[in-house]
Image (cartoon, rainbow, N blue to C red; front, side, top):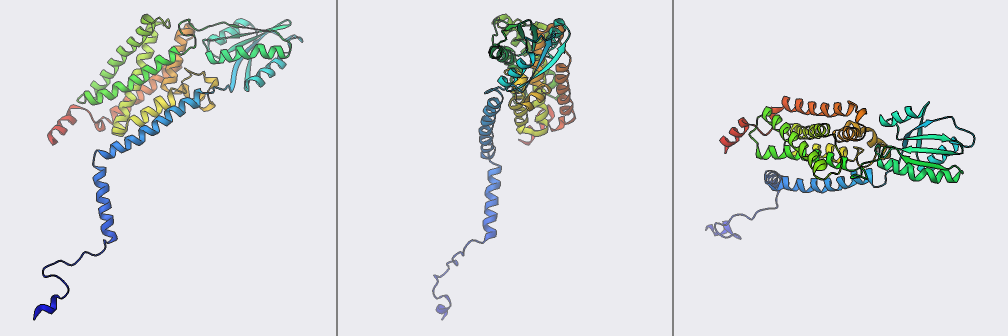
Length: 367
């Protein structure tokens, strides 16, 4: 009797499932995304994308700044009263056409005043008028690339307008550093080792409390600055450094870089490397004026470079080595300001930093 009621379906079998509803599909998609977000594959995937982008940006920033350095304006001192035979205006115009840049002329009554402007790094060359000739004094220590460009261009332009031009380097680079890159390299080392040291402390000395973290950052900065200066000067004899001043600059640079990462670690957690790498390496080092002089950098980089820690460090180091009697406080003020800002922000937000003994005890209890 009951056979007709179950016709067409096996006894006890479930009804076949119908097509999945959109709500079910969305629920499963959200579940899969949530599982992925909480798996180790999510940060690994993000890191793959970040590293790939950072590699391209790193190469691009240095290529943009250094591959084809082009002058925009070159401050140049002028002394003497031009005689009709010298044709100063014609020579300057020829230089500007050949360089594709403006020579920003500053007139000085005497050569001594013009030379003092070179030592104060206000101008990069001195143009002197002589009867039937001209002299162009360049300063390799002020910027090797600028001096080389001026030295190559001036005699050629002079020949075109029948003016002999004598070129001399009044402040050459040291023999162990003929291209003027040693100071850039030691600054690069102090910047990178500064934040790498902070990264390593956040991993291997996680239990340090805030004051202890600042103190140990200062300690490795002082020792690291000493070893950089000692190896470059005493070990390799590449550059004769005013040791105490160069050591101070390197240590302050390392401390600033390390504390900047520590501040970013408190603000951004595990992604602190992004702003650190962006400011210190992608932007700071190409604009520092160490590898390519500021007048040859793209205008924006040339302007902002001296306000960033790498540029301030190169500036201070460069003056200490080649213009010892004309050191100025500005680059030190820039480094001190960045270090003070980093320490202050880190201290205010220290409760967000992933380190500290209280944090470590909490994590251990949760485990």
